[in-house]
Image (cartoon, rainbow, N blue to C red):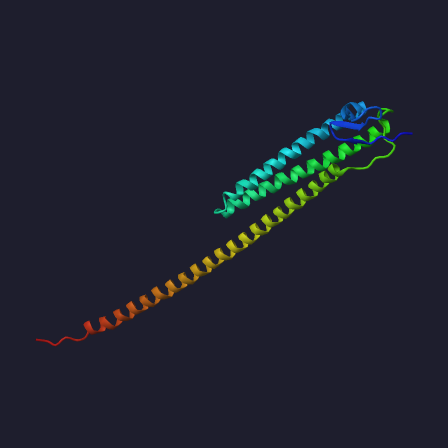
Amino acid sequence: FLFRRFHTGIWYSCEENIHEAGEKCRSFIDLAPASERGVLWLSVVSEVLYILLLVVGFSLMCLELFHSSNVIDGLKLNAFAAVFTVLSGLLGMVAHMMYTQVFQITVSLGPEDWRPHSWDYGWSFCMAWGSFTCCMAASVTTLNSYTKTVIEFRHKRKLFEQGLREEQNYLDQEAFHYFQDRSLQSISGTVEVYPGHTGPRAGL
C-alpha cells in the first residue's frame, strides 16, 4: 500500500500525487456525503458569522479608545464588544464541531480513492480552537470587569445619596432648632416689653 500525504480544509482536500509532481486537490464539499453537505454549509455560514462578529467586537474596542475621556461610554462600548465576542466565540465553537463531525463521517463514508488510513489534526485546526479559547476568555474577563465596575459605581452612588439625605436631615434639624430658638427669644422679648407699658400712670 502507498500512503499518500494529504491536508484538508473546509473548501479543498489536497493529496500527494504519486504519478506526477505536486498535489491533486478536490473540493471537500464534493467529497462529503450528500446527507452531510447541509451541515457542512451551516459550518461555513457559522464560520463567516464568527469572523464578522469578531470584526464588530474589535471595532467597538477600537472605538472605545476614542472615548477614553468618558468613562461610562467606554464601559458600555466594552460591554457591547464583550457580548459580540461571546456570540462570535459560541458560533465558532459550533462551526468547529460541525466541521469535525462532517470530516469524520467523510473519512468513513467518503469516496474509496480518498479515504485516509490514518490522519491527525493540523496546526490550523489547533489554532481555530485556540482562538476560540482566547476569544471566550477575553470576553468573559471583560464582562466580569464591567459588572464589577457597575456594582461598585452603584454602591458608591447609593452611599453618596445616603450621605446627602443624612446631611439634608441634619441641616433641617439645625434650621428647625435655629428658628425655634429665635421664636422663643421673640416671645420672651415681647413678654418683657408689655409689662412696662401697662404699669400705673400718675394722675394730673
